[in-house]
Image 1 (tube, helix red, strand yellow):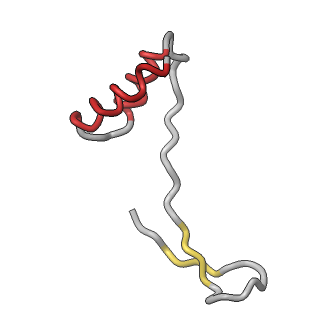
Image 2 (cartoon, rainbow, N blue to C red):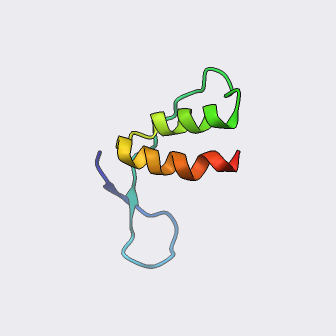
Length: 65
């Protein structure tokens, strides 16, 4: 992943350079989740975080359903 400088458009002042950030990868959902619990599970599985962090988020997100 790289951040590359690109020329700014317009005359807003400043250095004349903006940063182009990489785009997020979009993954289409196959079907809507059947419940809030299933949605939380899908989100945490796709988030790419450590299992210990996912457990903390699971505890935080599940009661909202």
